[in-house]
Figure 1 (cartoon, rainbow, N blue to C red):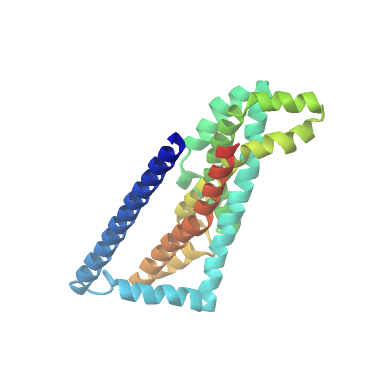
Figure 2: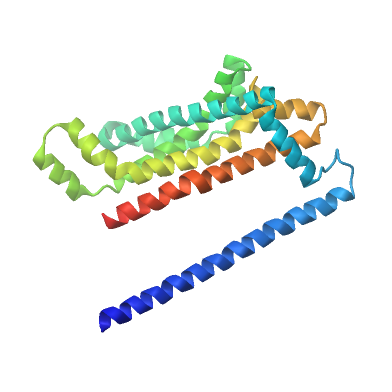
Length: 270
């Protein structure tokens, strides 16, 4: 009897959560539509070069994908972002491991290097890279990488601090091979933190890559944005910004959120 009552209560709770979630989605969609309507109405009262309407921006966004030269610029930005994420992830992972395992370096990495990288201006890294390497793709990757490294160190370091020590002791009782323990026990337990690091880096990198390409790059959407600014091409400026917002949003909804839900279910069971 109690079990049946529990099932009924659980079903009612699930239905209430689904209804609440449905209402939240409707409210979010209505607010987005209201924003687009306000944008469209305002665009009717000002010149197109000052505020192009959403329909003009949407057409220009399609042109960005269809035009071969502009599609190359989009791909260059993707290369910059993925390269910076990969390099910063490897460096951040290595520094977090060194901080966790080599106690003489812990104070330097945790109390000196990480706060320094976290506080250093992204524009500062960009200008220094421009002086050192010129206006190149390497300049963009270098600047974005230095901005992402502290995020990787902090996330992975937190994961290492919160590992289940009992499982680690169990692994050490079964084998003395440190590499086997690391790859079979430590890395699997770090998966949620590693994923959170990549997810954060992906969002942050798209925020800073535009600025890096705008000032220090010779390719990418930031370079395209700079050309549009010089020609006072407002439609292209709005289209590039909206395209990046849409791309990052779809990546979050279609890629990162499903993976996050799967990880949550898996590690909740464990």
